[in-house]
Structure formats: C-alpha cells, structure tokens
Image (cartoon, rainbow, N blue to C red):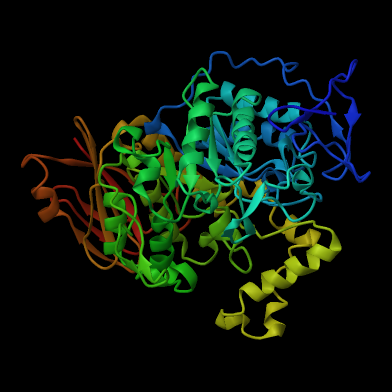
Length: 577
C-alpha cells in the first residue's frame, strides 16, 4: 500500500464489491480486520466485509426530528430489550414504545465488541454495528421505522477508550493513545499530542457516520470527562460542528459528564461548547438517597432531603461550585444561564442499575406508592426526562453487568467486579462476594432480558397505565414539557413533600409529591402568593387512581385551598381552571 502525505496507507482494489471479505496483512505478517470496518460478520477478530452504505432505500424523507419541549428519552440495550436481542426484534417492538408516549429512543453502544454479549462500552470496531445484533441494514430499518412512528433515535458512542479484546486499531496507529493523560481505563486518547490530528479525524468521521449513514437524530457521548486535552472541550465542539453540518435536520449532541460544567451546554457565543444536553446525575443521586437511604460511593455527597431535590429541580443540578466531600474539592459551576431542557435527568439508567452489585432497579427496593410518586416528579420536571427500558412497567428483571471476553481476560473481569464491592458491608468477606453475578456467565445476561409478558399483568400493568397517562399529559400540555426557562419552580413543603409549579400561558399546574409516610400538604400559603385570588383547581391525576394502584387509597383533596391529605406516599397533579 502507498503512504500519502498525511501518513495514511491506501490502495485501490479493482472489482471489489459489497459482500466481499478482506483483511490487512501487517509488516510482521499478522492479518487484521479493518479498523474502520463497516461490518465484522465473524466477530472482531475475523475479516471485514465491504458494505455499500448507499444501497439501503430510506423512506423517512418526511422526518424532521422532535422539538426540545416534547423529548422523552428511552434508553435501550439491544441485546436485552427483547428475548431475541436483535435489531429486527427491537424494530418490531417500537410500536409499543411509541404507544407509551416516548418520543426519543436512545440506543446503548452498538459498535462491535468481542464475544456475543456486552453492554457495548467495550467496543473496538467503532464503525461496525455489532454482528451479534444483526446486519447494518437491520439497524437502518430500525431507524427508518422509528421515524415513521414519530420516534427520534440517538446513538450512544464511546470515544474515551477501546475495549480490552480485539482493539487492533493500535496495530495501525500506535499514536492513538498517549501517556500524557490517564483515565479509569488506562492511557488517554491522544487528542493533543504529536500525531493527534489523525486521531481526532478518526473520531469525528465516526460520529458523522452514524448521522449520515444511519440517519441518527443525535449522539450521546460517553464519559466526556475522560476525553482529556489541553484545550478542554475542543474535541466535543469539533464533533458537534461536523455532525450538525452533515445532516439536513437538527441533530442532538448530549454528553455524559459528572463535572457539572455549565460550559458543556452553554452557547458558544458565551464561550460554551454548544452541546444540546448533559446527563445531570444529581437528580438521580438525590432521589435514590431520599427514597432508599443510599450513602455509599458518590451518594456520600447527598443528604437525600426534599430540600436538595427542590434545589436540583430549580437549577438543573445540585452541585454548582460547593465543596464535594467525596471529591475533596469544589464540584460544578453555576448553571443559571442554561435552559432547563438541556439537563437530562432520570430515576434510573444503565449505570445506576447495572453498576449495583446485583443490578437491582429502584422499583425493586422501594414501596410501589413511593415509586409512583417519584415517577410523577420525573415526568413533570422542567428538565428532559430519561427512562430506562422496562421502567415504564416496573420490570421485575435486573440489569446486570455482563461480558463475553476470552477466558484469560474474563476471569480478571469477574474478579475485578467482585473486588469493586468489597467496601460494602454486605460484601465484606470473600464468600459473600461470590454471590455477586458473574459477568462472564450467560445466565447473567439472560437474567437481564426484559419479560414483555409482564406488561399486561398486575402490578406491572398499573405502572404502565401511570406512565402512559403521565407522558400523555406531558405531550398534551407544553406547560409540562421540557422548558426553555432558566430556572425550575419547586419547593420543599416539609421533610417528605415537594411541590412544583409548571406554567405556560393560561395553563398552570401544581404537582405535589409525598415520598414517605402519610400526612397533609397545605398549599394555601405558597399557592396564594403565586396565583390569582379567584383561582380554582381541578384534579388531573393522582397516583391512587384505580387505573394506577391495585389497592387504591385516595388522598383527601380540598381543591379550594388547595390542600391534600395523603393516606400514604403518592402524588397529585392539579390544574388551574
């Protein structure tokens, strides 16, 4: 192969066509797959297949995306979303997702990985959808069908590291990683050292591919705090600029970043990086601490009070520069100039479930009535809500950490996984740690597959009805959607109860949620200072409605005051008439 002035080796193969298999032979004689392969039909160690990305016949020409206010994200892992675990099976179930009220499907990473099962964050063939899920055109059919159903599709992508098996990219480019920076996965990606231009180009072209060749409506960039460079955020701005320029419609760029940096989602005119959203995990951490009393790890920074929750809803995240005991330093910056819709919040996601020892969901450990109250808050906040697959029916299945690496690596993954939880009291001895599911066992993966038959039987069917009702309200009333305002309106009424005000024009709502115990919530004082003296109120929804609770215990509501007497934890949505 000939080397050009940029250092790229190239050759033209006359007669090559779609479907052909090929490999590169390195100078030492080793055969390797194409590091930019579009498909690996026999896995990440085998030959690459030529794919013609223009051969697929798209039918989504009418599609223009979803506006910020009505985005409700649904995080999905292809391998466990259905028993079949394929793109085709996921496509067949998109109608059910749409009918719930979801508007954006966010797909966990599909870049090919070693073995038959993985979360996706161990990808090594970044341009190739995993053959474990199907052919690249199967993924295109999924996106095409989603667009016909009115669903936007966001792809989760990983640029901060490569997986531990099959990462042949470094055989071709030894400058891809650098000792100048380190991350939790080892050496940092070379974004600012010698030969970094080619690394940046590789990443940017990969991001563009998902939008141009798969019609993705956006990208979720994994762990952007681990994309370390001297000019912080430069690669994120570069990705956003190129991806947006490659599409005829608006494209979403979201980041996962625990630093709470307002610059990530601030406008470039003010020196921001210009991304459309960031996963704001403080909401989850406060909720989990409040509902379940979690205090280990990053939960140590959170008291889990209703006051913390109200503050988080008011400004998007809790830590805005104050000292973090866990970090031993200040964490976060002031988000007061950021529209609320740019904060993506959740009660659970793949990390917050799967990084627990047994992958238990929040609805597995809190009372159903508290779960319903928390769900109402999530789906009425001014931020952009994200739900994790199965959450809409309080799935009984866990989401556990699973891999299928070669045995020599796999044993270290299993040992490391169990060692990770040694500081937890319930896993303080080696015998107890052996009860943590083995990531390498097929049974761990199989236990994480959703059971779709649950949706039609109690108690899951009651939860599904609640989620459908909440999402319908959010979509029917712009006042309840993701907001362009710079501040949320929430207050702690007492140690167990929060009140939120949402308004748009003549539509005014008060959402009251009580998370623990029975008790009274008198809104008279707070509502009296905010509303007209002759305001009257209609009950739009309570979590004790017969559609949502198998054993209803309705709260006593005096709509004139208004005041609510909760017989147990729950939530009420009031609308001004």
